[in-house]
Length: 333
Ligand code: MG
Image (cartoon, rainbow, N blue to C red; front, top):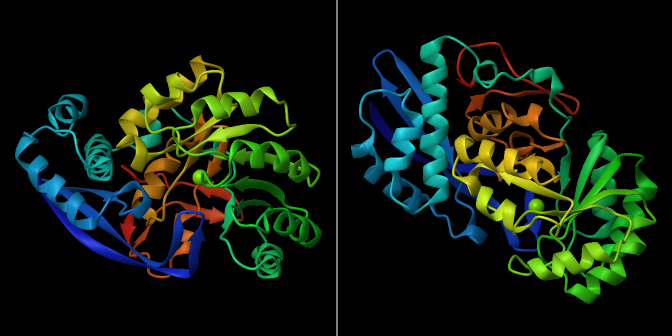
């Protein structure tokens, strides 16, 4: 098998401002894994607040290229051979292996997982941080029935209030680790008055005991961990501390570990949201193949960028539609 990796700059439709910082562009890496007549596609996202860079991802893939062997069906064996390092790099290779394997078997990936794509939950659409009135206007104009509101500014309550006035959409909020325990305990009950489905990552990544304390306050809104959880091991460490976990391929290092993390969460009675970073249709479509196993989906990456070079998962409003082509079903645009 031959592995190539190429950085690709994603131009965002709007400035992507969250509590971790703002971006106009992101640089990801597209992986192409060839075996004879077939090529599997993968992607690693260069996410600044996870210390992932395009150079780091390319270097990881260059080192991995010598360890692949010649059978894409040996996914578990190949992944076990890989060195530690960039999780986004590992995700890029894992996704490409799954694409190649399922193309070789002539089936869509979801069928090899035994999943019904029509069972995928509808996706949310993200409203990034801005002036409250601007966020409300975007929420109203988006037309999406489920919105994820990025919080973590002094205006958080005003933001949710004006957005609730502007739309009947189901609302989820994501503080991206911005609040203290006391801020969260004060704010969440006030935000709950605007009818929220869930609150994502109210506290800093390391503050697992804070999440547990917050949940014990019974604030009336389910609490989900995102930054606090990368893989199945960390899902287990959150048992009892949160109502649900946010699984992303760039945190788990690909589909394989994402499956383990989802099943671990289930065994511990936690709900699961499948989500993405700023990514093209390659990585988001890969995640969509696991969506039927999840309670919530947040897979709007391709809707946030202007220059997606690929087509994969399609959106009928908030509904995720996967093709019945073999593999991921991703093609060049
Ligand atoms: Mg989040």
